[in-house]
Image (cartoon, rainbow, N blue to C red; front, side, top):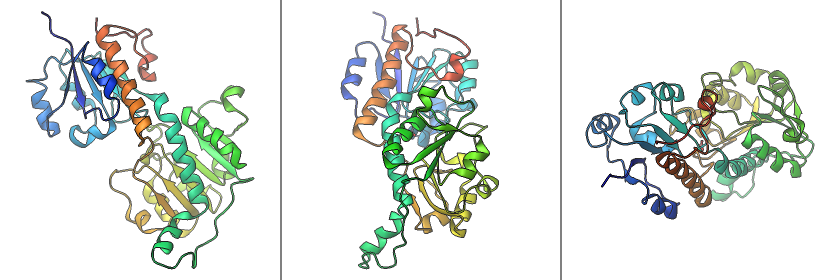
Length: 338
Ligand SMILES: O=CC(=O)O
């Protein structure tokens, strides 16, 4: 009897249990037991040396670290697929993977609505200066000394990165009377822009009352917003980031917030998670949540199921659902193991 292809799970499936059960009929699924990166490098030469697919989550970085060139170089020849369960795959060196013949898949669609919802929460919360009111209320002062917020109606929202999530944010911002401008590498066809005006990067910085970041993190977008860019923004701007922390120079943002150049920030992501710049932690005009963009039962279930569908297709030799764009550009019609 031939044994089933092996899928190694970096972190157990927590929500999409039915999909996990269904996968057992086509693959031998197991959760990695290595407790550190070094231990994994040893285990992958031993007990995991014929694994074909890795399923991974962002949280797996806590043990394994990034799937960088070094990590990829330790993977055995049998390993042909890395199926990531999130939209952002900056923790994976997709070029090093491609050079080793490893296809990387991601899960873009499942995260869109939940991330856009949280963006609106942070946007409105920061604009209304809600965060300082939380501690006032709890310290028994009710709203004594609570600063006035601002209304969204008639304000300009600048969306940096009008992809799936940026567009979903625009749709949610419309009913609040926000006027949206956006910047992308290229303008979108009119139907996708949905009435938002395309502007240059500098125009977006200069014209927006609120700026929301939705570009992926890469070498090109790291510190896309730093002190120089913040200086070009309207005094009193509100900055929102639910993409990746390192797109903004966190220290420069913290200084500008303390100086009052930035009126408020709404953040879900940080440069060195779980570390957060102390100035941001101390400044009540920073509305901060701990990378919760997709942290709902329904969305996590969809993300897990999507990644497992890619893993299933990989072991069955079927077309993969969502290969990362960098790899798709190289080869069309990427299929599974056989
Ligand atoms: O951060 C969440 C994701 O990239 O899906």
